[in-house]
Image 1 (cartoon, rainbow, N blue to C red):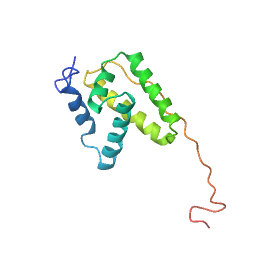
Image 2: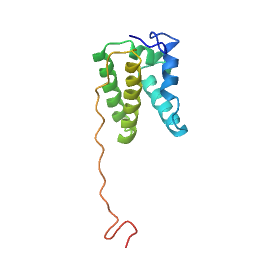
Image 3: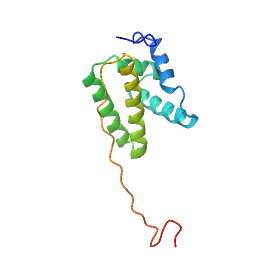
Image 4: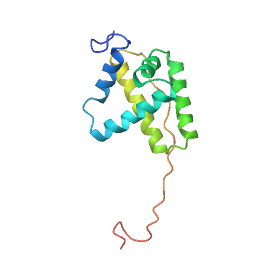
Length: 130
C-alpha cells in the first residue's frame, strides 16, 4: 500500500521522494549524491525529477537493465571504480526508500564493480616508516 508521503508516482511525489532521500545527510554526501543522481538522469536523458519518475514507473527487468547499462557507460567513460560504486549505491539507496514507501515493489540487483586493491609500497617498517 503506498505511503501518505508518496501516495503515487506523479510529478509532485518524485521531488518529495528525492527530498526525503537527501534529508539529514551531511553536506558532503548531499553534494556527491546530487551529482550522482544528476549524472544518472543525464544518462536516462531528462531532468532529475523526470528521469527518476520514468525510472520508477518501469518494471523490474527494465530498471535493472537501465542501471546495468549505466554501469557500463560509466566504465566506458573511465570513471573510477569507487565513484561508480558510490553512484550505484545512491541509486540502490533511493530505490530502497522508494520500495519502503510503496512507490516500487522491486530492488536494484546490479552489483558494484570490483576495485583493485593496491599494495603497500612504503617499504619495511610500520606506518611511521621505522
